[in-house]
Length: 176
Image (cartoon, rainbow, N blue to C red):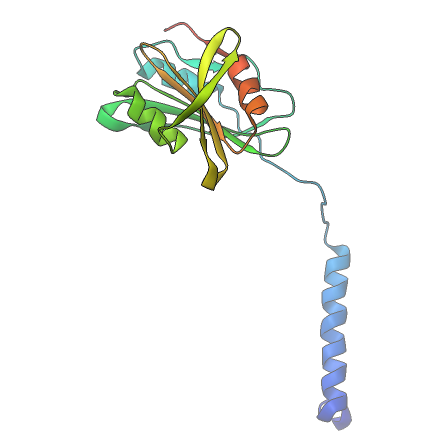
């Protein structure tokens, strides 16, 4: 009995027993090889935002195909303004955030959300012109649309086409 608890032989047996136990544990533990992105419903957050602001809220008619809404929140912006954030994982597994606010000045909100104040062009989506902004060091693209009562920003690591796909789904819901 003493030879199993001492020396190199005892050490090798103990190591084998530990590795066999770990291997057995890994064998019986269920493992998923599929990516799981939690889906987070945002309709209640959009409705609550609509009750707290003096303008018609913009929201997607439906989510673009393959996109997963994975975050949403309402926050206070500068000067007491309200901000709605909706976050997505796109079909290409990039990140996109849609933000809207009645913050003034609108240029400050747009620059803060897009991390740049430099416009590099425009993109037509459904007959509306959106400013394109790009911050190279963060690989961040943004579409900005400033309206009289609200500023809309779609931003993230997705390409221009994916950002435009979300912009095409946006519609203003009546105040109420």
